[in-house]
Length: 398
Image (tube, rainbow, N blue to C red; front, side):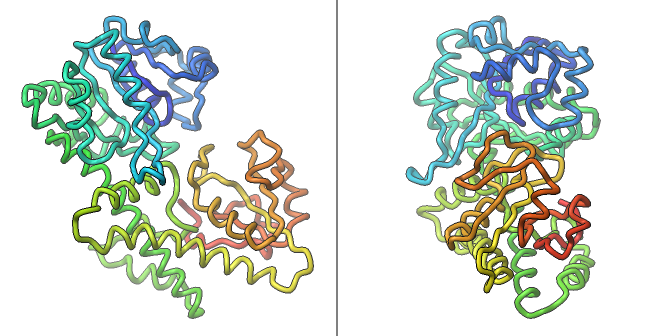
């Protein structure tokens, strides 16, 4: 079978690698350097398993910038292009999907189109009005950055949705679900074939619940910090309830990354004519947490003549090279708005400045120079300056 994958970010590249173990895959990206890296057996993203598979040379995977070549003879065209949240439109920017659908309509109109990009609820049904000749289904992804291939090899579930206006596409949805199950290493993968609107809602509600859980434990930590209580003891006691559990309970500067901030805002936008209190509170809670963290940090340098605050890593998680929408950026901007000098230590960033602040790769000089080191996650590299470190990381893990 031949498969075209559009987009080689965490979602697209992990799928391309997964499926190219058994099928012929052509992955398209508009950035020539990324395609060249993949063809050279080098991963353009930080994922140890992807890197290992690419380096092995055992995959039937070829990267390209040519949509005609990518779609030649394809049975499936998987779209995994970016859909950033547009705060002006209060909506995901789905233009990259629409451009890709134009190419598919032009060069391979009979192919099964699978949208993997996160979209607003109702998108698949509405886009079929614009592209009625295409066979479009939707399959949400549930992947962690840095563990994307692992999560495809060991999926928590496979969800594929077909539009109710096109019931004949159910068979294609079931076939694609089986394709993912066959590609996984696990043999007992739960499969759910639904309407496309329900599949889109599953994605947004799942991520919003995760954001809710992050926000809950962050607000618990805020309470403990203000009242002078021991955060860890409270969380340990709460988490011993088996209905709650001890997962996803480590305080942070707020939920961030590529998915949770935009997905919660998009879900809130989808509630425009539906009564709600909780979804809006989840979005607002993240702003409140960053406000508190910034004020707490500023209190540590109050009274200093010319304080310098150091930001240790912009990335969201340990082992990641991605810092899109990371919560520490919001904290950093709030600190800078008060006129405090900020220096960033981020080895994954080549630029000399980030949002007007100096970027350094010299960790020792960084530690010596700053008055407070802000770290969303603790790191052994900061052990010798522990008295300078500000973090809310209670359990020393993501």
